[in-house]
Image (cartoon, rainbow, N blue to C red; front, top):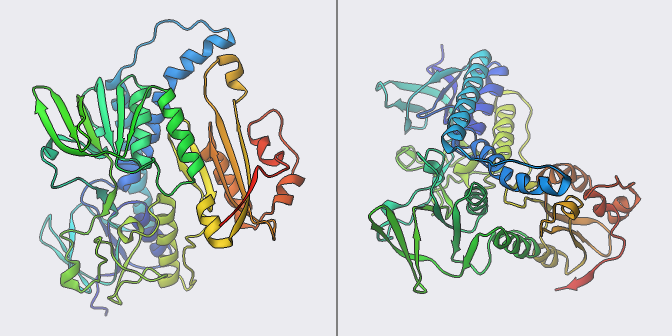
Length: 457
């Protein structure tokens, strides 16, 4: 008889942990899972899903305006924040129920409790004091928003977690940060009618994305009335009655009803007992793993944002699936972290796959750049001053497409399909040989015949 109650115990009921638990159980393993908050994790409960619902809501203000150019006479409109929150909460509750039912159908035993490690095989459930022994343990607790702990008045700010549960829509909002969460929420608040400012310490928003996309999105955000401040940070936050005043390093005093910090996320490893179990951590607090998601302790594994590899929900799901197949299904494989399609639900939207221009130059020394910036067909009648950007990066010798970067409507949808082509090694000749779909914006991807420029390192 085994000394272990479970073959696998998963700490964390988000996307990666749930996928690993279900797949392992499908391979016949005895699986338990503990989640201290709600099943679905950051993405479903307080991340990707509610954020995308908010993005949809915020786009209607422009849709009403654009309708006039197509002959529609739209009457007076009014936005009800409370109705949006209620609708969002109902959908999140429904999705959590789906996650729970799927785990139950797979035969996974669920524990609604915070769980911490006591040793390489023992998990302590804090809700009832129970100790569980498992042959293997998977850590999948994700990440949590960073806050500037040393910032005077930092207790007055909110993060994305709280933004989903505000009692009413602020009239004035400042978003601190320049990553995808920051630019997405700036677009959400502005689209819903809030006076919105984004402040970022770097020289340009969206560090790590292609420079042309970064500059173009910055310009489009400002067209929408969002004030974008780069190269500055808050030095203190002052509460003045119902107002907040953010004082910056360059001497500005920015007044708002809410200040939201979106300055990055950190692995959610504090207080998990990882040091007690001997699990090695990076200086950032991330769990260090190899390509098979193994930690420094042979019986303990980790997937998803807690490892700080590629912090995206589909990556966590793929890592969890690979772990379960490898350890319990006799099918050894690992998640491939290259050529990952990515979307930023900014306004306008970004879709990207492959190398940026800077990365392509560093890797190959020379790159042919195909770039097109144009007014989408819709706005020829709507009259909106919004440009779409498409950019293809090609290695000159092999003709291989190294990266595709898009700013505009449904860019994320395009990135998903383009990801397939680039993973298959598509060349620019393959793009050129593909018949255009007309009239679409996407046809620009197969009709750019001559490079805009050749850039060398």
